[in-house]
Amino acid sequence: MLSNGRSYLAIPGPSVTPDRVLNAMHRPAPNIYTGELIDMTYSLMPDLRAVARTDHHVAIYIANGHGAWEAALSNVVSAGDTVLVLATGRFGHGWGEMADGLGVHVETLDFGNSGAFDLGIVAQTLAQDTDGRIKAVLAVYVDTSTSVRNDIKGLRDVMDATGHDALLMADCIASLGCDRFEMDAWGVDVTIAASQKGLMTPPGLGLVWFNDKAAAVRAQMPRVSRYWDWQPRANPEGYWQLFDGTAPTHHLYGLRAALDMIKEEGLENVWTRHAVLARTIWAACDCWGQGGPLTLNIADPAQRSHAVTSICIGSPDGDRLRAWMEDVTGVTLGIGLGREPTDAYFRIGHMGHVNAHMVLGVLGSLDAGLKALNIPHGDGALQSAANVVAAASIAP
Ligand SMILES: *Cc1c(COP(=O)(O)O)cnc(C)c1O
Image (tube, rainbow, N blue to C red; front, side):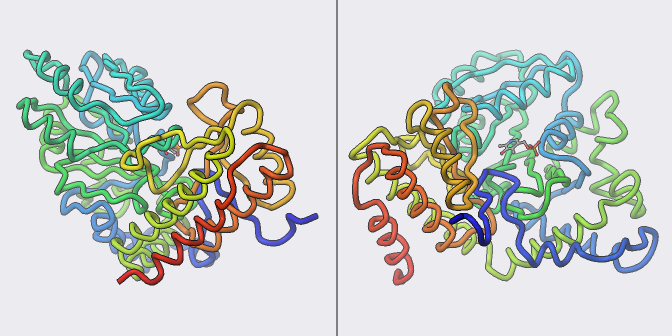
């Protein structure tokens, strides 16, 4: 009854697709041999580099994030090689499982589900690897299951300090275009993303950026799966090499529109918008938590993502609240993931095409839901959230 009207899919991917992206995709199939599709596709490359803050190479795959994981791994490790996974949630483990499927030996440092990785332990592990078995360190920047944000620059510093030569590979699938990320300045060798989160485009494009160090590792590989090989995609002699077959035509038009939107807003402004909206959510949660069971999964604000927030409210109220929100208010929240019991958790996706009224709407809806379901909670959450938005609007 109250949910009719425009709904908000507030799950952490796929994110809200802007009308501008949808409209750009609404067109007849273009020619893939000559014509404007070709130039338009090449125009994406500098803007994709810009959004990852790199001057190096980028390859586009017709794939989701799991495909991008495998694509990146396939270029730098083969069966029998060793990688070190730094797990801070479900997605770190998932990337490790992908490597395991390729016959790669996976060592995992599991840092649990409620905080960032411990760089001291990483340093110890790397220092003990005196014969350099570890060929790559797999780090998820924002683990979408726990909503933790890891310190990628700090990881690079630790790798440099121990003199370890492994590649630093960062999964930025949830965070690119949301949380500040500086591939070159932070010394990341391989970056992975997908179209459907901060990049505001439907699922279907996997993105891999790599620097010259990673390209040199690729060049030493005994063989690389032809489809995943990033070399021809990043340095094509002809358009057909970009996708090793038919181009993902409509997705490319969608991505073009999304990158235009990011460029027009300015990447720094995009990051600031996400930061303010995240703080708005945290402010409300702090108030609710003062009079009830609600807690943010990541206690330390410095370790929280600006793209997604995982919240614990106790079993089975996570599930009850999600169902109530969808039925009554038209907001679909993300399920608990990577934490047990899953029905004690829910997640708010606030990545990409999200603004203050959408976030304030979710928070107002949550406040109503807590009341309707008789879940104890502190007062003043909405006021506190409004204060964050108000203060940001008048900040110099
Ligand atoms: C969404 C996500 C993935 C998986 O992406 P799919 O497109 O669902 O395959 C991997 N890692 C992170 C951090 C993600 O947020």
